[in-house]
Image 1 (cartoon, rainbow, N blue to C red):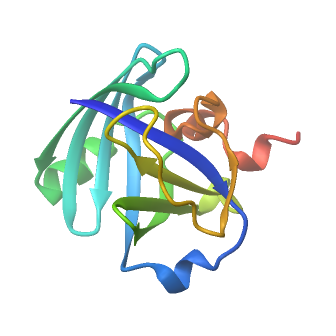
Image 2 (cartoon, helix red, strand yellow; image 1 turned 135 degrees about the horizontal axis):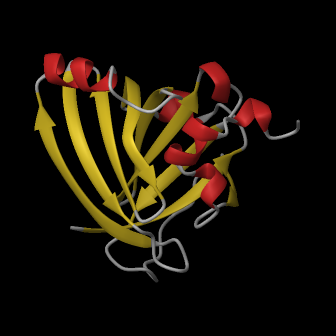
Length: 157
């Protein structure tokens, strides 16, 4: 239940032609405290409830628990969420032995594209695709819970 991942900015839309799947995601937070986040997500026709713990100091790992719930329950819980719902398209790209999840954000976060890759251990090596840019692992402003509070469009204000 410990998730290890690295997060990067994306430099071009070349990833779109490499994607095996793409899915619309709508998510909100019942609790977005820095010690723990409770997220509700609609991913396509599926609903999920997720609890995430505090990130490690380097931002590489944290506790994550997820349970599938009905689409109807997810829609109802989204109504109870804190202000700032996240709307994004997730593209999945398999490269070597790794899955890259690329999130293209809409709404108040339009213009932001971020990729994550999950690892088995913090020092694991992986092939980097050409569209992978600057690493932002551990930079809290790129966490979805933070994007719901201070969206990308407000960063330069």
